Every structure is written in C-alpha cells, then in structure tokens.
Amino acid sequence: MPQPILLAFGVSARMRGRLEALYEVHGPVGGVRPETVPPEARHARALITIGGHRTDAALMDALPDLGLIACYGTGYEGVDLAAAKARGIQVTHAKDANATSVAEFAMGLVIAASRDMTKGERMLRAGEWPNRKAERMPLVPGLAGQRMGIYGLGAIGMRVATRAAAFEMEVGYHGRSPREGIAYGYHPTLRGLAEWCDVLVVAVRATAANRHAVDREVLAALGKHGVLVNVARGLVVDEAALTEALEHGVIAAAGLDVFEHEPHVPERLRALPNAVLTPHMAAFTLSAQRAQAQVMLDALEDFFAGRAPANLVAEMA
Image (cartoon, rainbow, N blue to C red; front, side, top):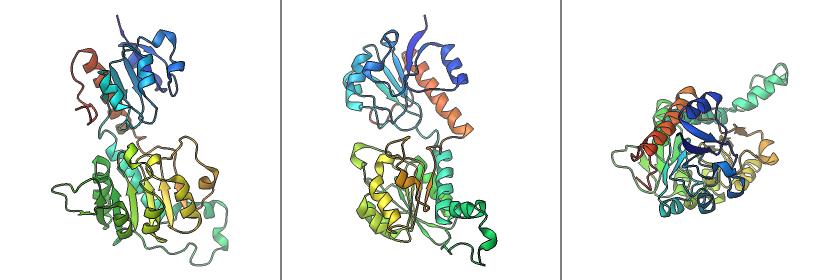
C-alpha cells in the first residue's frame, strides 16, 4: 500500500504525477496549519514543504505519524528543528541544488541595480529618449575595480564571488568565522564589511539569529554610493529601514529577490525608482528545479526504505 505524504504547497502537474505514482498524496494545503490539515491526511508520514512555511511543534503534533519533513529548496528557516528532533522527525533540504542559478541571478541584480538598467528601460518605454541630451542617464562607477562584500560565503556566496572576480571586482566577505583556504578578505563584522564595500550581497542562510542583521547601522555604513542585493531571505534585511535608506539617499540602490512578508511587498518599496524588485525567482531555472525535485524524491525514497536521507539539514547530519 502506498505511503501517505502531505504537500504544503502546489507542485507542477508533472511532479504531482511522479509523486502519485509512488505515494498516497494529500494536499496541497497552502501554509499548512494544525487546523487546516485534512482529516484524511493526519496519518501522513512525510510532509513536503518550503523553508518559509511555519512548521512548528503544533503542526508536528497534528501529524502524529510524521517522520520526515522534506524542504523543497535550500531554506528551512520555518522548521522548528528542536521540535523535530524531540519527535524523532528527520528534516532534509536541497543543499546547494540551486546555488549556481541563484548566484547568476544575484549578479544580474548587481548589474541592474548598479547600472540603472530598469531606470533606463522605463525612460525608453515612456518615449523620453528623443528628448534626452547626450548624457541620457546619470554616470555610474561600473563594476570593474569596485569592491563586493558578500554576507555568507556558502555555496551561493562562493559562486557569487567567482562571478564578481570575473567582473574584475575585489571581493571580501563576512560570516561566523573565516573560511580556511579562501583568498578573499574576511571582515569580522557585517558593519565593517559594509563600510569597506561598494556592493553588499546578502547570501547568508536565514536564522532567528540573523533576523534584521542588515539594519540602519549597516545601511549607513554601506553609504550613499552603495548598492544592496539580497538573494537570501527577506527577514535578514530590515525592510522598513531599507525603504527609508532608499528614499533618503542613505544608499544608492537595491536589488531584491526576497522580501520580509512574501508575497506582499510594501507599496512604498514598490514605488521606489532605485529598487530593482523580482518575485523570489532566482532559483527558477530548469537545472535548479530539476535538481531540487530530485533531492526531494531521493529523500522520500531513502526515508521509506529505512535509510538515512543523504540531505539532512546540517543541524541533524
């Protein structure tokens, strides 16, 4: 008899077909909570979710047979790991599966925000080009010779660093500790990194400890010519402070693919001409999605076969 699993989000018809060929599939139940779990799904042994969804002790207790929480993607910040450990529930994620795709997108945001690309596009689409003088747009420094600071030199951060170096940028980073064998300069504080760099890329794994790590102080240190790019999680950046910094010229521009209260983005932020905004799409490539899907399928197969899944989160490995 097929094993029961519960989906906390919608998947493609192709993926659902693959799952239904192997398992008894329930859901999707968007942002699943104890009170929204269908009665027929309470015996689910595996929950397929995404990192931003809250998966806490109350939800785990509503699924008494739960043994696996498989996060589709790299993030798992919404999972109460202590509660999972206490209940013997394994938690997996697609570590590094989308790193290349996200790093590519991060560089796209760096270029778009630093070079005023979206401002230029709006000017052209509005038919203003014929009325502009020789200098159609304000002159900007460009990237060659500039300094990029990376907050979080993990799989994504490392790939951003190599791409920034190809653009002839100097790279520095901040994390909990220096990484051995890494030639990039280490900065012991995030504020110090922000003071040093021209472009600050946030690529750190989101945790309760780094909520609003990029705050008013860090933004002020980045300075009026600085650019902030966030491809990590919205909670790492104080969104209200960032909006004010962009409005008042505390920093020059921002490129954001993630937001504090997705999918809701404040109107003030959406109205800013110096903010390049995209709807959490950095991992939307065929290669990344296929890799993430395969990791999820492998985790289910291992769990139901009685094997330890290969992609347990670091706290459980």
